[in-house]
Amino acid sequence: MKEKSSTDTLFYKVTQHIYYFLLTNAYFLVSNTLILLALILLPLSISNVLIYGVALIPTGASLTALFYAMGKLYREKTIQPTKDYWKAYLDNFKESTKYWLIMIALLIVLSVDILYVLERGWIFLTVVSLIVLAIMMVTMIYAFSILARFEVTTKNLMIFSILLLFRNKLNSLSLLFLLVAFIVILYGFAGYALLCLFAIASYYFMRSNHKVLEKLMHDFQ
Image 1 (cartoon, rainbow, N blue to C red):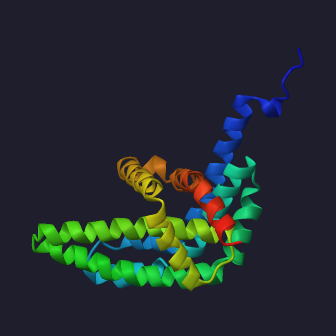
Image 2 (cartoon, rainbow, N blue to C red):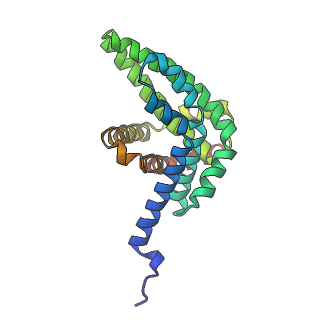
Image 3 (cartoon, one colour):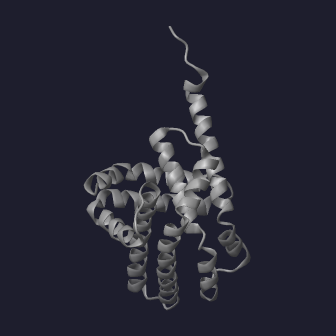
């Protein structure tokens, strides 16, 4: 019987993926230094929301780069973390940032609204605002998944992400559950989760959206 090569063993594949997750996640954290410093140094309050918004500007391109690298890892089973992450970051910076600036503005308005209704104990409006936030978050997962795979204008990106949200209701619900699960893990184990959670989350988002993106490519070729 022919022996397995060392690169074909389960142990090698697991350790290789751990390396990919850790390094790519580290690049993501480095490219989000501004928002990390803002969260560490500034208390969470309405008065600091605009500062958070400015600090979040680089996050759009870094999310696209992370989704690109993790999507490639899912499809091809291997990546070059440094090359793939930073190339995607630079190549998609302009379009990602244009879309992300719109999302930042909407998130600031929605965050202020949520804090406002919470302070006044308006339960119904709080629930409505949180539902809108959940829809926005899932739409953004679709949008960054699209940016990671295709060249698309900001206008079409917004149209396609909303279209995918409502066309794939079960997948959208699955993405929301995954998002909530990762947020809970991040909240409960922040010290450890920061090491690789963003990369792992992006991997599972791209894995969940793989068939959706393939169908989108087929429909609009």
